[in-house]
Image (cartoon, rainbow, N blue to C red; front, side, top):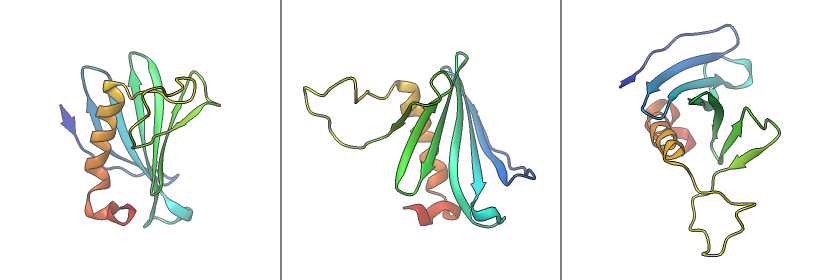
Length: 118
């Protein structure tokens, strides 16, 4: 089930969509850049999978994943083939839920409003 809604907050963060899946809940937000109400500085996803919260921040040049359990630990998503003998201390495969979050984010990032990111 996918639903989309738009609301505004005083702190320039807007809910732009939410999805409930078998893996958990995903909420997407846009954050206005530089304190104005027009340009979008980033999009992020607030993800809750069986009470494990994570945040995915989508920037024009990278995607950063942060977990609530280890707030000082972040992952940068790479879109490239890993070598067969990659170091699992540095590289982790995306989970099916991570893949779902990224595919849902693609819908927002491909809209005209955010097309300057591509």
